[in-house]
Length: 314
Image (cartoon, rainbow, N blue to C red; front, side, top):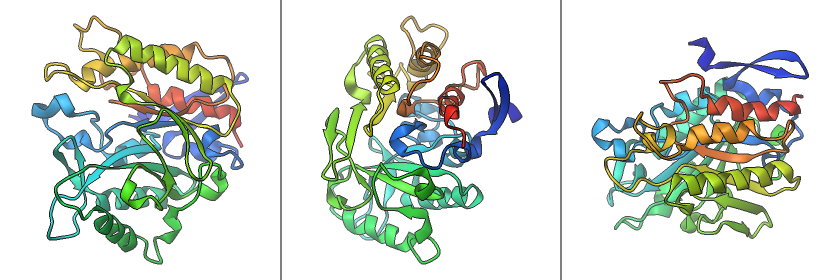
């Protein structure tokens, strides 16, 4: 079990052992978010779906386990599901993920309390429902969370802040048009843009292509660009692709099912990472479906992404 949480790193022929639950503490605190490689999960809260919903299930580990395994970017979709109360549910497609926004915040707080050197980025997206109380409900939960004891866990600023200033905090990447003044403003509909704070983004979305081979080609192109460029642009790459049938699951597209004839996303990413130059600049944020393959420990994508940062050991 230890091997799932601790990784051995070889840098300049010296071996290091780094616990994934606090890998950020080994980085230069003067680095910015845009200067490091951050493993993330796509549709992070879908782990509660049962086998009958495998066609829309993208993760098999809880948020707590994801954070402990080194994931530092969570993809959370929110919606108002009750007109009478202040509920704010985490959903995927039209399905409730059996967790709400308050539980997400408390899970992150609990993790940061134990690991104060880490930074958790949460991408929040607003999903439309017939109830128009999203801003009211979101602010209710955020204000409830941000009591005097919790204010230290929330960061309101930009992506060019150093890790020293961000450590122990939650950073929202905000795609919600009704609460544009919260966190770092993002625009999911554009592949390249600068927000009103002059922060630059390059995004390769999940729906960039409908075939894995084409998405893999685009991922490689984006990663090669990020790895060879030194600037303040934040790169966000979705190493995943939408399924188009109930017989083809996100797991099949991520790892294959033994019968898969097309290239699969996570194994292809491992090959891309192995082909990088010895000291890449950074890759940015890379979102994964099924980040951990229980069937084969030889393919450890999260470990490889974290390792890229280790040239920046403090």
